[in-house]
Length: 218
Ligand code: GRF
Image (cartoon, rainbow, N blue to C red; front, top):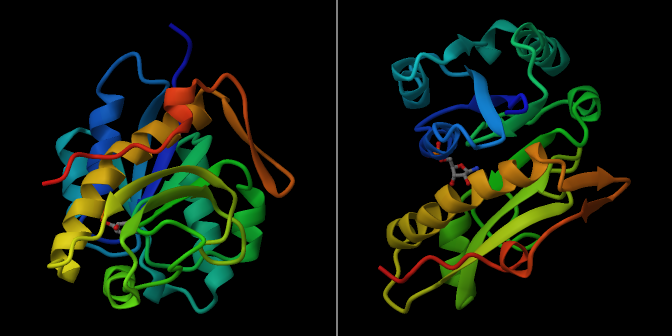
């Protein structure tokens, strides 16, 4: 078997997307492995998830640094120590400096709980409901300096139902996220998606892989 791509995951909290990546990597045929999990929050639930699986964990507390760039240098050092090639942001609640983003350009991806480019930023589900949108979803994209704006790798759609609350829409979207993120990481680890300038460029993608993944209604 060819070597699996060593992947670092950055988290700040619950880590349910991290868990979906850990579960995907449990399959020996999956092209990536989780080399380390880094949190800016000590005690983040995701750290325990990684710890249970024997995955290296690190806390880089942002409070300890005066400058964003210094914090990011420490993150970068931890990723390098773990010989990471791909970085997945999974509920990582810090804006990364341009220097960090440029260094990892094309190898740094994020999951966002909306169909980008709509509903960037925080508190997505309430805004989706208020907008009257009938379809929402999630997006995995390459990270660029502008927040939630990088080229899109994969998206999944979910319906917005008439009686949805933030909680119910969030839960439905999260179920889609958990299927989408491993799919996107697989494409990147296999070199089937690459960042080329401002565009995500795909090779060897079947029609099924390129279409939306729609989880069943709950
Ligand atoms: C997810 O909704 C993700 O899309 C967003 O932050 C949330 C993280 O949840 N970026 P979890 O920590 O993965 O459970």
